[in-house]
Length: 206
Image (cartoon, helix red, strand yellow):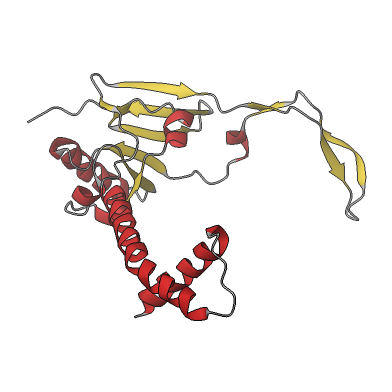
């Protein structure tokens, strides 16, 4: 009943916005047209709902290929200012420049607490799944923070794994920013090198 009322309301707005019909005092004509259109609108809404659910169920995150070799690559996160950063006093009044345009800094220098490592893998791949489970044990033993990132496993299949809702999806932004090319990839901060490290791990097939 509530859905029909919603459909009815949507139909009223649609007809009001797009209909060329003129309704004077004869409200019954409008009501009849709304009632006639309601089943069609309701059917289309149900179809759209199914399409959306199907898309959600088939989300995989960005897909990358499996690593062929073990290797580590590094990203320099240093950033160069494209404009001056003003300096303000305690009263909020600007007093000169804090950092000049062209100043380059590395955000790792200012990190007191390291962010969690990202572990990018395919939870639907049995061998990668086993490897990551063992890796998680090591992390938890050493009290290290981590985040699991899915690449390639459909959401509906992910729900059947041991990881389920504990996994995030690899986005295009994350893939590009961290230059993720393969699974398994472990992304972490190398404090000594002042770099972001991407360790690619070749997981042998059984």
